[in-house]
Image (cartoon, rainbow, N blue to C red; front, side, top):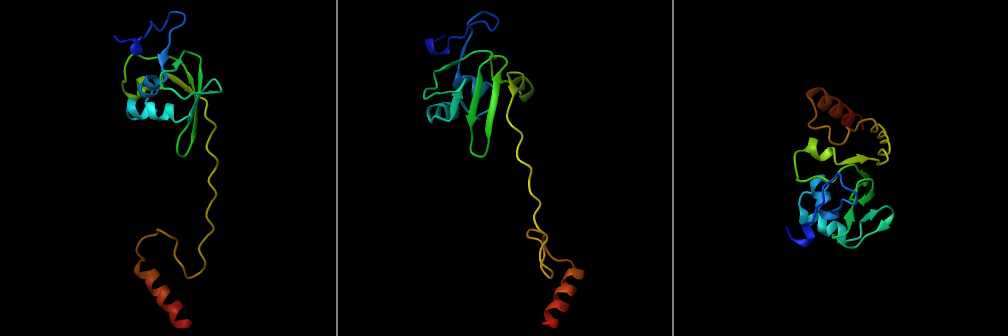
Length: 137
């Protein structure tokens, strides 16, 4: 093992893992190189401290705040992991503390004579109503 891949036994005191490897193991990112870019771009905080290096270590109990494109993840490290396994295994590496997404507001109904956006092709009945509406005006 090289120096950057040093990994202590998870049960021992002071066990730690590079943040980019942990993000990859926990399936937050699709590849380790994307995890490195995320860490170096300044979008990750470990226990409220902004990091700028992918070589920073995470330990069990640390809280990671990760700013992604459309959401913010708040993850508490529950385990370090030894490999990038299936989703069920990766899900055991963290506890999700993220706030729930805001409720979606219902779109107002379309004005009379107009269809909802994305409703697809009009039916024969809708077409007759549209023709009748147009002939009235």
